[in-house]
Image 1: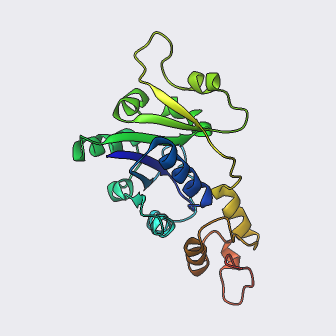
Image 2: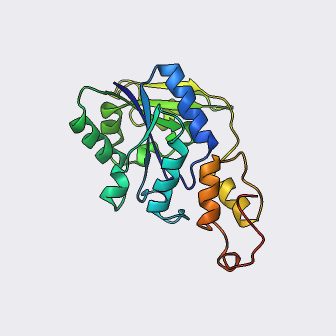
Length: 214
C-alpha cells in the first residue's frame, strides 16, 4: 500500500489540509493519507489552544467524509513530545511492506534539520514537499540535512495550489468573533462552537454573542 503521512498540530484542522492531502493522493497515486495529530510538538510546545483529545476529535471529524483519509492517534496515545522518527519506526514495524511518504509544506522544511534524526526519517519514508509561491528547489535542498556527495536519501517536490488558510488565522477569527465558515469543515466548525474553543477567557460565558459558527 502507498500511504501518505501528514502530521501536525491540527489546531484546528482546516480545508487547506484536506485539499493538500487530496491533491497529493491524485499526484502520487496514493491509496491513503493518514492524518497524525501530535501530542506535543517539540518545536511548538507553547502554541496549542485545544487539548490533544479535542484536536484528535476535530481531525476525525475533518476526515470523516473522505474514505481515502484516515486518522492515527499513535502520537497522542504515546503522549509526551511527538517525534516523527519514533512514529515512522513504529509504522515500519507494523506494516513493513507499505511505501511511506511523509508530507510537509516547504515552510516546515526550514526547521526539518532540527528534528530528531532527520536522515533516519528520510530513510523510513520518502519526503514529499509541497511547494508554492517563490520558494525554489535550491532553497529546499539547502534546508534539508546532508547535501551533495552525502548519503542523503531522495525526496520529491510537488507544486501545490495556493490555499491561504492557516490554523493561526482560524483561531484569530474565532477570538475576534468572526465567521470561520469555509475555513474548516462544517463538522469542525460546529465542534469549535460547541466546545467554545479559541475564545478569550471572558468570552466563554453565557450570553456572549460571538460565535464561531456564525
